[in-house]
Image 1 (cartoon, rainbow, N blue to C red):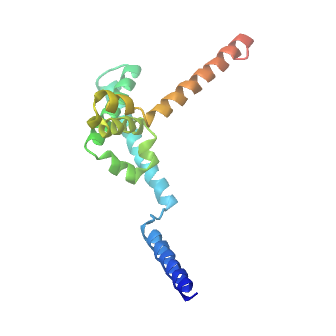
Image 2 (tube, rainbow, N blue to C red):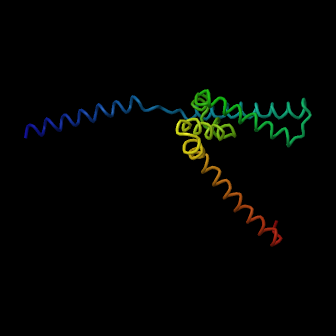
Image 3 (tube, rainbow, N blue to C red):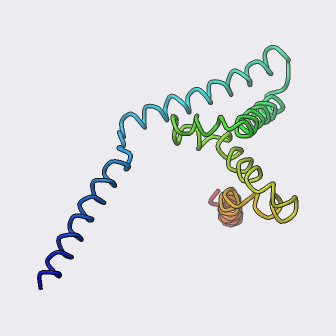
Length: 161
């Protein structure tokens, strides 16, 4: 009987120590600060994009569509380069959704997966795993746009749109 009491006491002590450990290693979140950082980070990315767009249209004299393509391309390349040098992770840690939502976050998800699985080879590593994270985004984006296209087409046939 006394052995059972000792075992129960030991279990309780282990549970307490474990709960204290979990409390120590669990990160605390400040929602207001995270929202502010996301706002600032996303704003910086969008401001950079607007600067590139304005530079291409005003200084280089490109048409708006072509300037938009160059803007997207430059932002994607910057994101991939920062990902390759392991710097985009630092931006995401600070900016959260502000760094993950724009086109740069999508480029980061594709590039980081490709970099992670490159040692497994071009076909079974990069080729098979590159869209592990980005694949669902592409899939649901295509399915949603297809569905909305059907709704729009039916609306035009019925004269609603």
